[in-house]
Length: 233
Ligand SMILES: [Mg+2]
Image 1 (cartoon, helix red, strand yellow):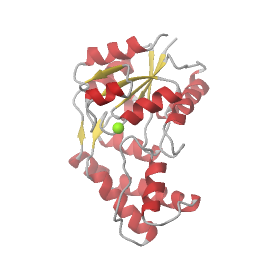
Image 2: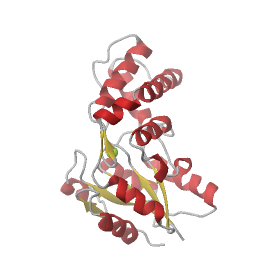
Image 3: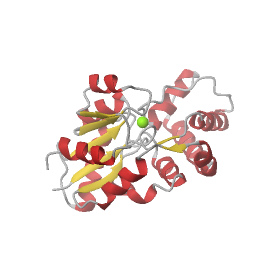
């Protein structure tokens, strides 16, 4: 049996800091004709939830067609700024080596579980040339659901469809940087290895219930060991 490894993207593998806010602002303006005064909290949230909440913060009802229009504009805006994403963002230390190491193993399947909608997830990882290490087909994304927890089951279902293997709560491992990732993993049916590379420190991630917390991805052996340790195939 193999382990399904599902990576969060922002502040776990890469960071593009203020650029996301700028792009959200542009998209908001294009869709609503108004400036974006406030942006919903983004940490560990899905694009569907961020878009809905941001619209609500401006007194706009998040109707399905508005969300779809917003999502389309957002995806195009991220894609148009891919070069800038690379220039202003950064690949987090150890990310490439960890992805490389796991991609080479025969006992793991590697994908993403991210709040980013799929085209944005692909755009961000491609900007840093990290797209080749993960199987995007079996991932779960920010438009699949507003909540993060249901994404776990979706990814497991997609992996089963593609590989004919059943991944359960003890053979699915999420790697993320927020208490929301930890919570989603446990509610959705997965073990969680957390990285203290986002806004939350190791104590917060431990308090949220992460099975293992690491400071970052720089110790590749520790990362791989943690993943294999928490999953019982
Ligand atoms: Mg994150």
